[in-house]
Length: 122
Image (tube, rainbow, N blue to C red):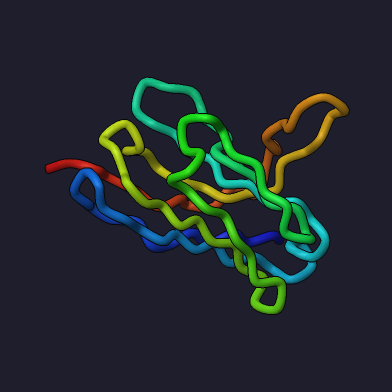
């Protein structure tokens, strides 16, 4: 059973920062591209960014320049550093391994963790 455990969320004021962590089982994490997703109330799940096993990253336009994804392959952990947070970043954040279908990343069906709540408010 794959386990993904997200942590690090909380309440932060606009302009603040948070660092999220996601620990995965070694067999799942190894050599996979990992992604951070978020689900906000009333919205569909959004892929915020991805990181390949070698460290190449990509981000959705709304977080470019503010969010940074990194990974520690030795610890089977992926991180999401979030700076200059905005109220619209409020969501539950999840990590998982997206699936490339030849043209875009698709969200996997299973292996979702509990997520970690990020609330940006004054």
